[in-house]
Length: 246
Image 1 (cartoon, rainbow, N blue to C red):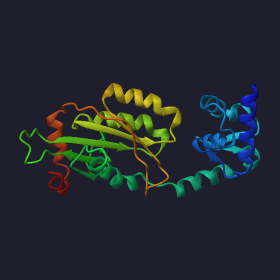
Image 2 (image 1 turned 45 degrees about the vertical axis):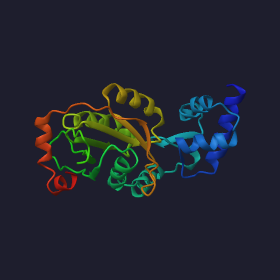
Image 3 (image 1 turned 90 degrees about the vertical axis):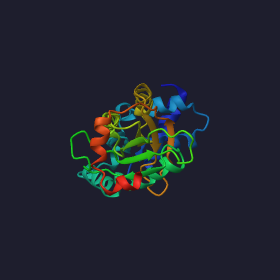
Image 4 (image 1 turned 180 degrees about the vertical axis):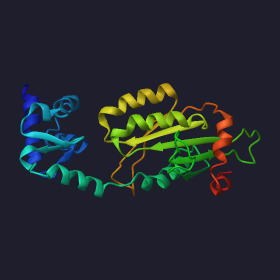
């Protein structure tokens, strides 16, 4: 092991000693960089991402959570999982904030509303946020309104599922956004590449802060023509929201 990697491992062990509850990958990376600011970012990433397989004292009781094995006792993994669920913020807590972000920050919609659930009533899914960009009556040229849909996921293990749902929304949307947690480090570049290939926008956010999710755009959605048979079909399912949007 190189001298720099050895220093990184030593730093990780010291950090984990003060974290009996465990620590997430992104937090661990930042803590190592605070301890060893001169360390190369890529070297830190490549050293710590699979330390549970290289260092006997370290384990991962949950995906993306590092903890010293000495802190894992009988039933501790179950307790950790239960605490994670109880402290987790539901996806729906982010819907209204993202709808506001689409309108005020990205300017992709003139109006947007939270949906979620099973509003559209079929296995193809319902967007978490549904918006419309409607051109002003004062515009000399007024194209038809553009429909924007978004799929938000807080569970990083469900990113592939979320991408598939986002693809399905292109049936009835001019633009589609996939919104995933910023701590999905190992998946972000691959998802971004796929989104660019399919014309889907990609947004990152802090899933632990519903008050200030820190929405960050990685790729803007490309406009494409939807299938208007499905546009009309799903618009009929919006009820009162249809009046609010149009």
